[in-house]
Image (tube, helix red, strand yellow):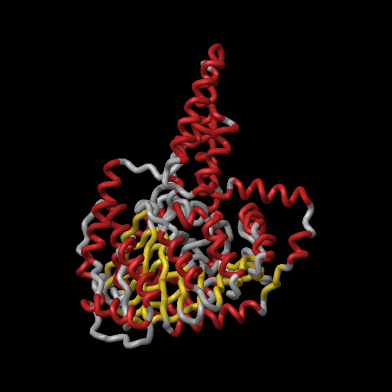
Length: 522
């Protein structure tokens, strides 16, 4: 493994030591909680039969409740099986971890944020009508994101496809140095090293100049990456920082919901989004899982306001504050017009709106395809609806190709990904693995017309539990750039054949099927 971190080695050891201590405390606390639960159950040992019968009845009620809920069928099955097999512990763990439970106060806060977001982001109907004249299918897809994600679609927005991470890093540094008014960063992972330290030096300087610099990071995403209470360190540099959903040593379903977005906004009219976090493996400064292939997009113009409102709504939700979103509109900071071809629609996806926006956006692309569907994804853990849609497309003569990693970051998740290969290949879907290392891009490109670049993985956590975002593109130059990059990437991939799937020992096949059964909970 090649490290290029120089003098940061000592600091990294301190971070890892602190993080390990924090995790050990977390697991020790969980062990104590499990012990207390077992102890409580043992108190009923003289009445075990009655307790077991009550557990069976409670389990049956839970199963009935789950079956009649709105969650995905695969997610339901993944919970029903342990509840039926282990009625005592399965039911307890569902009550702790199952679903997305919010307090009334949090529901009210999120409802207010959604109302504020909707009233701040106003669709220009002339743009929507022009899109409808070009394609009613494209207009319908845009309307879905407008109605359910509250995110308008825009013309006249410069967009540039950036891949791999080194390209995004160079562009981001360039734009950060130009900042005059504000910088907003929202990332799942931030880790000290070449990438973050370079950016941090710029943020410190900009904060000294009086620029409004704000950072949001996810606590679970950074638990092994940053020192505990790192936000306090940033505050010393006049960088405002908030931590999403702090990692607490308790059995709670709140750990399920993570801020998986990767957003950067500079002065309201420059934005970045995609799959690239602020850590050195994303720019191949060192090899973690071989060569890291990732993708992002640079946006300039009106559409950046969607990103700004996403960031501010998250900031206000965490901070219990009330920003005036309209103060940050692009036209307040630049008079430049970005006259480009095509349409851009940045959108967000939240587990709190009870609508699978990311999955529906992907399904719309699959179902409207006429020629080809090219997909990059680090994980392939999908439900029956999406698997069926991809298979129907391939059976109908559409060229469906999917690229996944060859070197995984999580062996058990990769095992589930590989469990789909056999049935997909049988139904004419072409599967490739990125031979040099890890494919982390989350991209769709369809028919030289549509593309999506964002943070949304093809797994249950991204599609149902995490806060995510993406950019939906129609007939922009970036669509063709993404296609070109995809086809060039195939030269570095190994295609998986049906014989590769059949020459697998049965214990491995069985293990993959078991993992796949519980994949919605991974």
